[in-house]
Length: 457
Image (cartoon, rainbow, N blue to C red):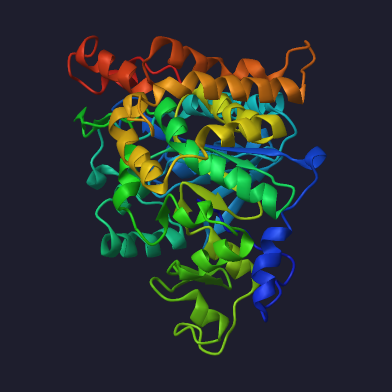
């Protein structure tokens, strides 16, 4: 989730609806300026007892952040607490229960992306060895109950933790017990954004299946392969889901703005603190009628903050976020941006991907999204067959898209090699969660802590 930093410039007050749409239009870039931003979260645990460390304890989350500063990271504080780090590789931040996230810098190619990921993981592993901390790349804590987990001292999280139980049964699980990999991608125009959004939503269930990696809850199989994805089904219906309007004629910035305006607010950030506005209306805010800030109108920064509190499978800001994947280890962190860059950053690949899915009805898309957390690649496909039946074809489109980009490293390799972890999953027919369950039942003899003992993250 977003980490708020102090802006040196005063954000303009929103006086006209056109400013809401202009915010999205500001993201438009010609293809030669498209970038790749990769975000990945991991769980932090103590290597001596596998406990999730608190923020303040010796060798805990605060000490972890501060121990990273010799690598060139600068602390970011909120109310006297270091809650993030800023540096040339982006931002290191904290999820609500201490999950550690890298929100990477916008980079030109996947070679840079994977190098960035490698630097980050090498740094946290080195620091972890000194502090007695380990890191897990999974979609959900395999053994921790909510009550066992600490809470980080970030103002927006306190508001969300209070509000989540009012609107869904699993919002606290989303905040406290899950990790994801995401990729942020650019668009050249409103029409380009719309087509990428549609392909991203339609094929998000395939990404969820390929990266499914959360089959255990509180030490036992939970009946799902991506329980993280299942959690989103009852987190908050006002701000999650497949967004049927994206597939309607005329979809663009205005329609997404209308959706976002109907998403209930969480907070307003003023003078270094978060004001609780949970459940209130941004439309009222635009009229100067927000009860917690009477007479005050929102700024563009407030609009940007509000957009970050919607959680659909694909999200629009000044770029598109692909949000369907469980957390995972190094190779899959590099594979997710490869998957989406291959599909969305080459026009031929984008057209081919859309041709594959454009005939699906909204009911079929929703059914696929609903089935994937439990069945992954065995989820029924619109028109018959199973999701695995198109996985190879989609990866083939992504491969051709990456090859067409022709972005090579110093050794002359293009970006297609980053798809290999996904090709292996399709060849084997087993998603990561199924491999994990095999280890759980055999090598670990039903003891989920086996994952810590053989962790190779």
